[in-house]
Length: 614
Image (cartoon, rainbow, N blue to C red):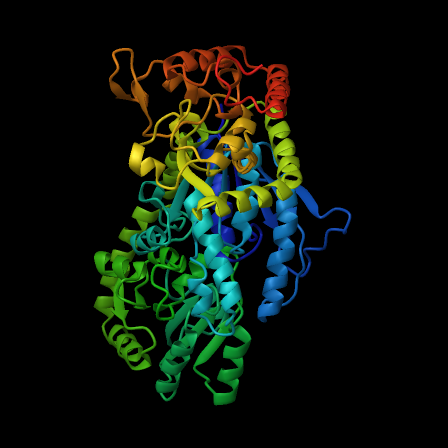
């Protein structure tokens, strides 16, 4: 069975942006080389001739190179102003969330970070469809926005940080672009076992070392000088003012020419500075199509890769891999802990200087200009290093990550999942007043926390975080350990007895159902470290009880055969027989019957009754 994967990211083919091009190559490679069924929820191309979807059709469907493309419309204000970027992000997010309900049901949903809030739409799609969720972190927010000019909103920064941490905590898999980024993501809340380092790449077949004197260089007058090139996004994080500062220091040296290829939020301001200061040793060229990149890169003698200080591990410039493939040395004007510096030093493919230091940058440029043998040696090392980051190799790494996750996708029948989502959404809305009353009663009783959060074991043995209204004394687990409640249990509070009798303590689990961690009907979700007393009166781990592992073949439920028909105080091994029977006989109509019986038990307040609830 082919793995089915859906990606969320604004930029995609035919956009020139690095993230869009990388995602295009990744999706096409998964389809072509690994037999995946891939869909993408992306934005409308940025080109002026891209057209607009009519308001009554906010999502446009296409197919390109075997990939199902769902283009979500949005506003297209200039990204050069913060307000324009935010409006574009929000409008695309809302339409992308709608598109998530239209894609073929995926096994895995992968979100990138363009825009930084798109992960919420991807997460919603994953939970509704029962898919596994992967966070592919191209940029870390709000660290990226805090350190760039024109962005000083504490409220927005906190919101982005909260979203980022939420996605990291709830992701089944996290992709970091380097070891420094991996460490940052773990500090922000990602479980170390979920984080995989997969570097970006270049296509070493399409991008190859070429002669310095070529058609591109001649067309743009680049053959006569020593060319120092920046190629890629001309944005807020690249610190290109330092490159212009270096150009100022070398303005009297006609042998050195600075070339900035690309576009972005800072290009207009940089061009204005060049014009105002009369820097005739700086040229700007537009983004180059993919087929022209080999000649464009070959036109440079040396590249500059720069990042603002503080962004190490938050961004890994993807231009690095293209420079390596082109066999050209690079000057990495970045912090020592940056992935670019680590790769440059490890493979001896360039020089490393401190960021924001134009004098050091000029010294490195002149060193490479004067030493042709050094340039050639660094360039040859760069090409050898590129083969370790070649496109097929990196796409295969994604394949190895996605296959086991796809195997764990919820195999819940579509009708059951749709029913769960719809009923839980209605339940969450209608029960909101009851939440307030219960929260007040729990709090007023002993001043302890309102909710009780604990890990539970779900489908495939995967743990998830579950919330219930607290029905026991605040330190029950610490004093007595995690064990099943019994008749007259001293841990249960007076309010808790009423909540447990009517199952009102379970209301917060409607959110777990909506997310897909649980269903309305299935085996009860148990704590991972729960203990059980066996027939000999010995305390044993719950994992050793026969039938425990079989329960993980389906999503756990709020109610089920065992919850309804089994007496509360019988041993788990007997309850597990009911669970196994449900797994064998399960059907949509059986679920409806069990839900109806559960409402009847709730109405009678009989959930805590011993000797039969019906």
